[in-house]
Figure 1 (cartoon, one colour):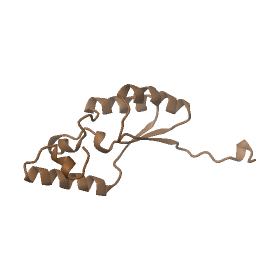
Figure 2 (figure 1 turned 30 degrees about the vertical axis):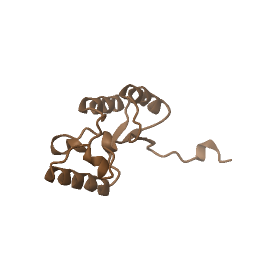
Figure 3 (figure 1 turned 90 degrees about the vertical axis):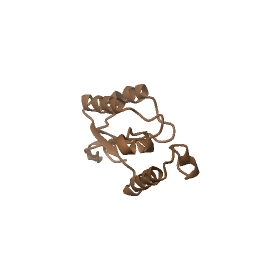
Length: 123
């Protein structure tokens, strides 16, 4: 066994929350943030996917049950209060590009949100 004094401990221990699929309620996220800090976490990486509250021309790529802008502010404030680095994460540029293309397609064809299902995308 490696002695405790010679073990490597990274400077940052980032906890990744993936909010797609069945995202937790805001109250749950806020309740675990202090636990993350208590357990030695130094940062919070949030992967919103369609749970991010896009606005303006992009609002239709958000899920109907997406977090509000106020929810995001509360999460970020809680992370800051607990001295956690707060990171927003978009999976990949390709994912965002696909969302933008879908938005343009539906805007050009005057389609509604329900047409996402026929396009093979789950809002």
